[in-house]
Image (cartoon, rainbow, N blue to C red):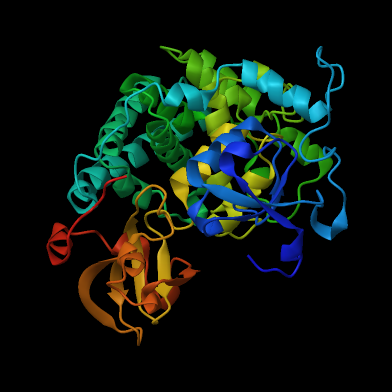
Length: 449
């Protein structure tokens, strides 16, 4: 981190075990990109952030004067830490009360660590053919369901559940292959592909949270069906390239309730899918829609879909907005954690995705261009990359490099990623680069999470 804003003389080194709510974390003992904390400098405002800092860091540097950027004083600081309070809690700040209240509820992350971790069972290259088949089948099914929704027909929820089960099977074996497919996007098919991508990313996130197979199918089905209500919103509103008027926005905000109604009248109605369709735009602070619910009223499924829905939307080209990079989208999720998004789940989603998820087209410092295949947990900034162009931007024989080898010292630093490219840059279109198993033979495969 640059010292442009804070002088090092204002830092105190604090062990992760000694962190408290209200401390301003200025630096970590490792690069920021190796952690879920994407904002370089932040005030600790929740117990989940302390847990995550302990997981990643042995120590951090905090600002001993309690200052925020721009020399604004930390409103939660008295002495060094949080304000003193009475034994009955009457002296608590609002921040402390919210933190303790949330901590009394069952933590999704604490529950996660009571479940068995899902292990990688195939390499990314081996999984790609099965993932591609599952993706194509789901693509076809989503198209049919959305057309039925447009016509007001009953939805074939069983068909949705069946193709989601195939996606779950692939993602359980190795999540990177289908996550690669979720990077393939077309502006003119946004709503359909968005539903499919939310399904895939939600399952991958649920896998990271160690949900069991049955829960993953429910979560994925909810993700696939979450936006069916949009099919009955006038196309001139859905496809408007300019800002919506107040009346148009009010009409757009009806889609969760329309989706709920469509799912309720479908044969074999699934309560979890109805819940997600209705509540995926609700927020932790009660400022969402359609009902303005607060955190305690929202299910884990709807909290997960809210994050994934926002992420996929931000990273997609839409008629009214250009796609943001993965890192910029994750920064937005981080910035709105605890308000729009569940705090703990937001941090875990950032940890899952990292700055370069599978399917990301990247240019290295040496000029070579490749596509990210996979990465290891806590090393998301050092993925395995399938090279497709050499340093002169010429086609080359396929090979895979593992950027962790830079950290190990067996690759020079000019193999590190310099920037993320857009689909189509240098004539590289993701869907035209199927992964072949032959690539795996060129270098050792290490897909362990």
